[in-house]
Image (tube, helix red, strand yellow):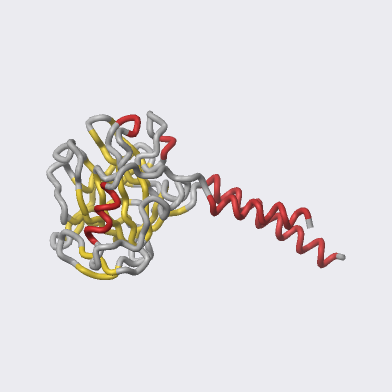
Length: 240
């Protein structure tokens, strides 16, 4: 019985993860409402972000091609910020400083780890960068530093990215495309100032699709321990 209780606690802890930061002010709140077709977004930016542990690392879905669409860039560094994906020490840029709201980029990683990027109408081309696996983080390269989706990689120790999962409501992006914000689509909001700045997480806001978060290895291991404990408990009950 004690093993069962411990297992339940471990599983609950695994899914709870580490709490994410909370956006300050109304800039991100207004951004979400502005894309909602009815003017009121069903996702609450102050409470509905996924945990910091679960938004650190990401993977492409089964179709193998993901995309990113800029929703808004409100930062003073709007002309300088760069956005992309990384794995280890390898960085691949998706948007340069000249990118603007409505711009879209494509991302593909093949079975060997080769990373391809491109545009909707131009197709994708090999970047020459190879990731170790179909697992990566997002980064924002600001004049004040490179800020990662993995908080422990940020030199200031601050969580610079919040992620929100779609719940099916209709939204219209700046590229003019309207449709349901599906569960396989996420909106990422970045803070681009060292130390967290005003922590509004609205300096660079982008929607990604066909890209899903994955648990960090520590959480996966913790969950595995819980499942092993559950198996031992069941074996003991059967033996009894």
